[in-house]
Length: 350
Image (cartoon, rainbow, N blue to C red; front, side):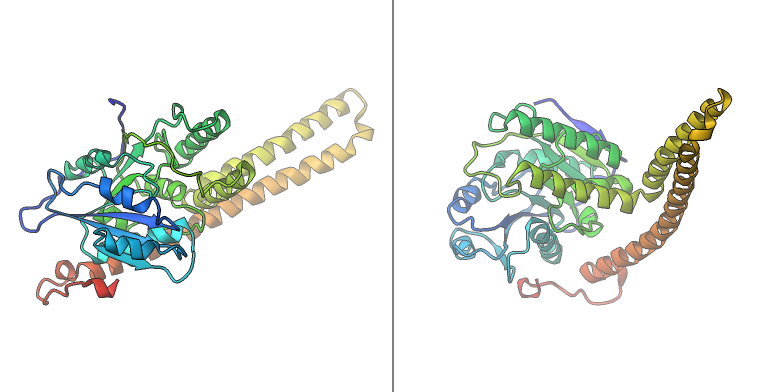
């Protein structure tokens, strides 16, 4: 249990001299009436360094009475989404609700009791100590007994891809067991309709957030994964999410690499034509010359698209900064307007 991976800038430790520190453990749920009671029973009621721990259930359009069960087993807050919207939407709804409820730290875990709840204290301590904005639980995907060899390979390869895309060493890209500071939660945007795990890591790397991976334990599986019905679907959804997020946050790099590859292919064909021309056989290779010219023009155009996308990216950053400022003003009005009366948030406002 000594495997720790750290990336990013050091932060000041969380100050709780004036206000009590609140942790909200959020659990997205979809038809989890059978597994939810066991998951809730395992959650901690006290962690050193924290003053308040509350539980939040996001019922993603369940039809088995999940929210009713949650209300009877000691869950503090329950959100009912009007229809089944997917894991990403439930995660975002949980973050927004947790922020309105005054959470200083947010821990996200699964309703199927996949993660060992006692490791929550391992997730939150680096944030309390000022070491990270986001802490992700590393399951050690290469050693999990319930993962097939194919799934282990895909998990390792996917984590490597995310490492390259985000600039963060990522041993477990799909782990949903993670702790998030209040500031990081305010600056988190999830646009994917599939999952939040991959996009938020690329986003964190682009914004140079401090990300820490810590080893966590897992419990025996209680049901098959609902996020991956089959490997082709998983690959298609994950690839789309990674590509969209990468082109959004690192457009110039992406289009420069793509344009360079196309241009090199054109140069190779051009050199091939020159070679045949030099040995007197160039007359029948004009098609190669035409294709080489077309590819080099396309490569240059792709590079120009990258420049344009990068300029658009600057505008997006400005808009995001405005959005984050508005969020802070809405969630923490006392900080932006010291002379005004505080506007406490109630559960009914979620």
